[in-house]
Length: 181
Image (cartoon, rainbow, N blue to C red):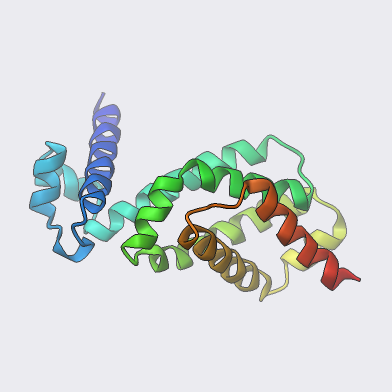
């Protein structure tokens, strides 16, 4: 029961933060007190889960990554399918990504993206062919992939995600093929 209440409070806080951002209130102007009032939770509930307002965004993204990883971990995907799944998942949360972009908050995600890529590379690569496993163990691989992925997500978001997931996947895969040849 306590865990369910904590999860409910966490979700209410996240939804309230996104609502305040959607109303045009800059993140740095949103106080913990204002956020708790909007979410109808106590400050104590807030501080049981978060250290500050920025942590709400990071936590929300972490929760979405866990959701994404559960989806891809049960599938045997090649690189093109993995790229498609990444962008299909991001498009599912289009409103939140655009909101972060419009508030210049997407840079908060770069460090998280690095850890997500590293986790996926270390978890999925051993199941893939040996070439993928060797590349994933390269010490610069995670930085390269997460930086490129971040910039593609950033540009796609600034473009209001006008391109379809299929188009984004195709363009990325064409880049891979260009460098492969």
